[in-house]
Image 1: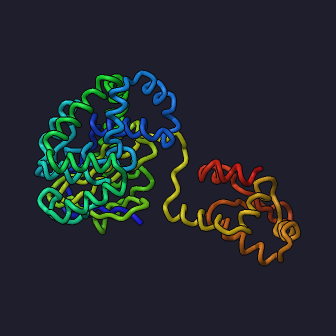
Image 2: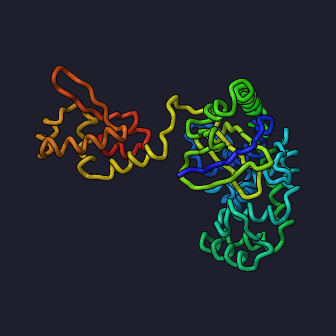
Image 3: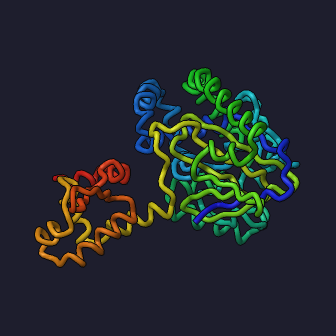
Length: 368
C-alpha cells in the first residue's frame, strides 16, 4: 500500500520546501486532542491545556474531528489555490487569507473529508452542488455522532458562517497558545527547509526526498514518488509544483495531500526522537503476522529472557526441532529475532528493542 505522485515534467524550480504556520497550528490542535500520539509533547500539552479558558476548550471540541482523526486539508489551503503553485504564507494571518480564497465548494469538501462521503483523489461533483452527495455526507456524519451531524448541517446550510467561525477560532488559538509556540518553532522549521532546499539544489530531488523520510522514494525512470503508507492514493503534479512542508509538532505523522485538482504536498516531521528508520508497511505486516501465531508468541516469551538453541526450544516447548526451526525462521524474517553462533551452537534471541517499538502492551505481556 502506498500513495503515488506522478511528477513527469516537473521542473526542479517548481519544488519548494516551505513551513506553514497554519499547517503547524493544525498539528498543534491534533497533539492537544490526541496526546497519546505524541508522547514527546506531553509537557507542552499539559502546560497549554492548563491555561485554556473553558470557552476555547468547548469550541475546540465542536470541530475536533477536523484535526483529531483526520488532518483536514483546510490546514493547507495554499494547495487549493488555482495554478497549483501557491506557497504557504509567512504568517498565520497570510495562511488564513489563503483559506479565505478557497471557494465555498472547496472549503466544504475539505471540511467534510472526515465523512469519506466523496472521492478524494478523483474528479467528482462537489457536495454543495450534488444533492446525492449532500445526503450521503449527512448520513455518514450522523453515523459518526451528533456533534459531527450538527457541524455538517450548519456547514451545508451556511458555509460563510462556518468559515468565519473557523477563522475566529484559529485566531483565538493563536492568541491563546500558538503564537508563543510558533515564535520558537519557526526558526527550526526554516532551518530544516533551508537544509532540504540545499540538498535539492546540490544533489537533486531524490536526495532531498530521502532526507525527508526513508518511507519516501523517487523512481526517476518512472518519474514517480512513492510514499510507503497504510493507505492507497494517487496524484500528479501536472503543470503545477510539489510542496514539502516540515512540521515540528507532527512527528511521527507523514501526511500526503493528494486531493484531486490540488497541488501535491508532503507534510513531513522534520526530526524523529528515534535514530532508527521506521519500518516499512511490508515489514510491519510481517511482524504482526509473525506474532499472530500462539506458538510464536510463546517462543517470544522464552527468547525475551535468554538465548536458546533450536534443540533447547524444542525441548522446552515439547515440539520437534524442524517445527521450532520453521517458527523461528518466520520471526527472523520479520526482524524480531537475532541469531549468533557460540562454537558449534546457533543461539536465537528476541530483539527486545524492535519489539518495544511495536507496543509496550505486547512487551509487558511476554515479559510478565
